[in-house]
Amino acid sequence: MSSSQRYNALKGVQDILPPDIYLWQRVESVARKIFANYGFQEIKAPIIESTTLFTRSIGETTDIVEKEMYTFPDKAGRSITLRPEGTAPVVRAYVEHHLHTLPPPQKFFYSGPMFRYERPQKGRFRQFYQIGVEAFGVATAELDGEVIAMLKVLLENLGLRELNFEVNSIGCEECRPSYRSSLQDFFSSRLDHLCPDCKRRYEFNPLRILDCKVERCIETRKGAPKVTDFLCGECRDHFEGVLSILRLLQIPHLVNPDMVRGLDYYTRTTFEVTTEHLGSQKAVAAGGRYDRLVEEFGGPFTPAIGFAIGMERLTALLKETGGTEVPSPQVFMASIGKRATQEGLLMAERFRAKGLWVEVGYEGSLRSQLRRADKLASHYVFIIGDDELSSGKMQWKNLRDGSQGEVEITQADEFVSSRLIP
Ligand code: HAM
Image (cartoon, rainbow, N blue to C red):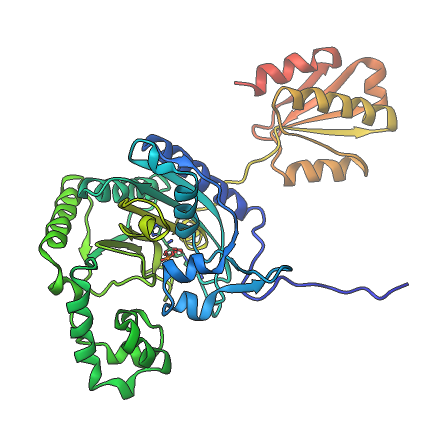
């Protein structure tokens, strides 16, 4: 016999098992409901894309592209990347399928795994799940406000209230050059204190120094110029507009001029929903405008905005604030003897066809079957033995209120219908 081998999940990835999975399902079903109310339709994009899709959009000098992508050649030698985020694939699909020819706004949501080769820690994984939305074709501040409002409604519907909504504007290609040179001025006398990556970023993209995770860079950038002081007139008006919509929609928020986000495609509005309950990984959800990305991918000028929620962080928060509701079987068929077990199996099939969750005992003593029924928190147990079969009756017990009795086997279907089907 060949020797056996045990396997563990890879570092930084995890299995989502019951009962936690019920929390995930609840998030997804609440999200689907809320997104539908705001007219967002589901889109499923592939998990693999050409590498350049991400290097171009997220940016060559970002941590994600420089350090975190799962990139490999496929068998034909093409460079493929496991998506580190969902926006670039959705924009690619939007352009590829000419969705810009449909009346704006076009609004989409997605959910699925993303991959970043990060140092794993609490709330930070190498495979993690996002639920995200992207809305295309409207440039006005009302859409920004509405998208942020939808995120707030979703989080509130899940029972989360004490979250911070942080917003900022990082300007556009008009305001960027003067901000960029003022950052270079600031860092020119501090270059020795920066990490090697940031020394390079200083040349090509000094904005990226502002979200470097290295401790000495965090220290060195204290006192750096704020992007909000460099906004052009139109960006300033847009930002003022967003803030007034947030007030109109009664979304308490905090302007955080230090928030630059770790992806290059953003223009104007950026936002993050943060919490103090998750240690150093504070952002539960994040997003912003990316008014130039559709063009960059070969489409017509199409302003756009979106966000993504980190599922691991969101479910960790929900677990902290409340329990997981675990569903349980409505009927448990306990049986003694071969004929009775088979009769129980037939009955279970009929009850399932009515839409009920039915478990069967299969084997073992009546005692052990009842123990299992109890452990599963079954609502009703039916007990059927060969003796009962010949008398045409079986016993039932309601484990929730302790009531019990007998029912004719021929009446069993009506019995469950009347008691368990609303
Ligand atoms: P992001 O800020 O990179 O933005 O990620 C969004 C959220 O995903 C984060 O706030 C966090 O909750 C979660 N997340 C990110 N990395 C990890 C990780 N390694 N482990 C666990 N959770 C993580 C984006 O991805 C943009 N595509 C969002 C967006 C959509 N912007 C516009 N539209």
